[in-house]
Amino acid sequence: MTTLPRIGLGCMSLSHAYGVPPTPEEGLAMLRSALDAGVTHLDTATLYGAGRNEELVGRALAGRRDDVVLASKGGMASVDGVKTIDGRPETLRGQVDDSLRRLGVEHIDLYYLHRWDKSVPIGESVGALAEMVAAGKIGAIGLSEVSVARLREALEVAPIAAVQNEYSLWSRNAELGMLDATREAGVALVAFSPIARGFLAADGLSPDALAEKDIRRAMPRFQPEHWPTNAALLPDWVALADEAGCTPAQLALAWVLSRGPHVTAIPGTTKLEHLRENLAAADLVVDAAVLERAGELVNQSTVSGPRYNAGQSVEVDAETFEEAS
Image (cartoon, rainbow, N blue to C red):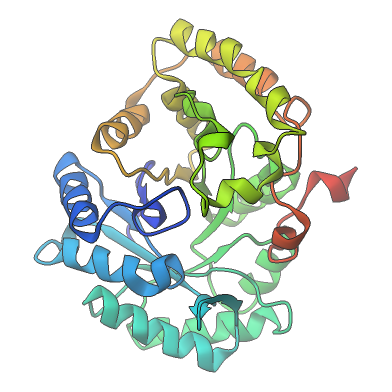
């Protein structure tokens, strides 16, 4: 499989999750502009927009399929409007075929198990994806929001190319073993939400102004009991980015990329100017002392609230600081 670029584009927000998504026409224009700007890694999923995101990405890739590393995910889908985790082999086989159809391609470079279905041994799910590799439908297998234990179980069944877990200055769960485990196993660690759900962009985000269906409304760190503590970090954060000679979002990305050459990031955005800003972070040279201060300013001890609420937490397998304490 082609080596993953250090910075790609997470496509979820073009179809759902963060505020009101752009229209399909606007989303298509954004994706085409992203390709023109040099994006070479697109990340989508069966779940995003109940399949509409894959269709959108497929339209953007028409005539340009060979320009990108294309990643998608299965094992979590919208079924009759309800998010459903299903890692049964027969389900995954069908979802791979559906992803290929919606994307309008014959091959997906990287296909993730979006969530581990805790009712199905992960070896069975990975085995089904290995069949898809053998059939030439996908190029490599990835896992998302998994623990080190699950990664090791999966590696006993088939090669794993990437683990996509949340990783940013304010979500350090990967440092509870996954950062080291992926490096030692030669597996890419793909950081989603590397700008902390937009928090570290420091562009005036206000929880009160979030759209009704914005997923951040359900996340503890954006709620009244935690937000004031977190927002109080931003003035010093902005000052540190100014000292580094970059934007706050770029500093957040530079920090994530500094965690190891096997770490890549897939920030999402609906705005072309932000995409260009994010891509430029791959070439930034930030003083190590500044990066160290960034890590001291924003970390699991200075941020208030867990990353997910109780209902969201049961869906993931990744290590948590709450369990580690």
